[in-house]
Every structure is written in structure tokens, then in C-alpha cells.
Length: 246
Ligand SMILES: N[C@@H](CCC(=O)N[C@@H](CS)C(=O)NCC(=O)O)C(=O)O
Image 1: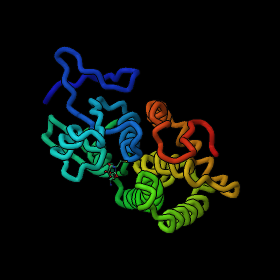
Image 2: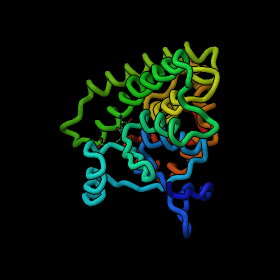
Image 3: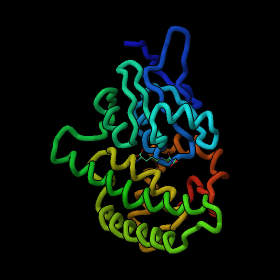
């Protein structure tokens, strides 16, 4: 087992000092929303890790990343001490919970509570994150290949998801139980970017307050502060803004 230096530098990079080797490496990009989901979990528990910056537009960086995980989707966690390469944000967070646990537990041990956490994690990935990404991806296409109908459909999906979350969050602090869980890690970046693209309505105060609580959570506030220098690269006209709920 390698020795792991327990503290993390204020820049957000886990430092590697003489004699200390990071067991965990996170392959990521600071603007990538699924990477935010995992960074929240790492920062929640001050889990030491070495960040590895991936630039998928750079052929060498993409090839090295695809050699690690052929799907070439970020994030990917490498655990050198255990010899594991772990893709998929939800799986990474469950892996951290199982093998590198800290004070915040992301999936409860109790099966009854756990299925609810997994349900809401799937809800945010499939019904908020996915349509939000479709709108962003459409903007990255050549003009002639864009799909305005698909973008309208994705916007409608987001509004239907907002209505469901509004009703659920009327009487809750966190989405899937009394504490902050995997489902809230999934909610934070997906709602943050979705609200930038299809702003919440005035009639959705519970949803708006929920995103406010997520943004105030120190782990997510740190993720957003580190992402901020890249916000100008966000491909839509309206750029993400920290601290203002549109
Ligand atoms: N289901 C995956 C989704 C990962 C994903 O879509 N990542 C995006 C960045 S946020 C990506 O790698 N996009 C690059 C591409 O699709 O080429 C997860 O939960 O980790």
C-alpha cells in the first residue's frame, strides 16, 4: 500500500511530495459536468488525489485517455494501490464510498435508503444531465448539422424534470434522504448548467433554493471556483455565473 499524503493544496491539486505518492488519480477536465460530480465527492471528504487534465481536442491527450478507457468519457478514476481503473461517475462515487470512505457517506448501507439514493442519481443523470448535454452538444456541431427540433425536445424534458424536482424539494433539504448523498452530487452540476441553458421559472422556488444550497456547499463551491476560468469556453451565449440564480 502506498503512503498517501493526507492534505490537499489550496489550488485544488493534491500535492505529490518527496516520499509521498498519490494512490488515486482523477482523469478530468475542470469544465466537464460529470467530472464535477466526482470532484464534489472527493472534496467532501478531502480525499487526496492527483488531478490529470484531459484535453479531448488534443489528439495525444485523447489517445492516452482512450488507452486507459476506450469509451474516452470523463471522468475516470485510477486507483494504483488497488490496481483498478474506474469509469462512470456514479460507479466512481460508490467505489470511493467503499474503498476510500470519509465522513460523508454517499450511498447508505441500508438497502431501503440506498435504492432511493440510486433512483435520484439516475433521475438527475438521465432526465437533467442528458438533455442539458444534448443542447450543449448541438451547439458544438456545424450549423448545417444542428437539430432545432431535438433541442426543443431536450428543453421540454428539462422543464418536465424541473416540475418533478420542484414538488419533491418543497419539503426537503437534500433530494434522497436526510443527508447529502450521491444523488446530490449528481444534482449539483446538472442543475447548475441546466439552469444556465433553460432557466428555472419563478414558479419553482423550491428548485431554486435547492440549487442555492448545492452551490453553497463548500465542496461544490470549490468545484465551481476552479471551473470559473473556463466558463468563457461554454459554447452557448449565456455563460454560467456563480452566485446568481437566473
Ligand atoms: N455516464 C458517464 C458520462 C460521462 C460524460 O458524458 N462525460 C463527458 C464530459 S462531462 C465526456 O467525456 N464527453 C466527451 C465526449 O462525449 O466525447 C458518467 O457518468 O461518467
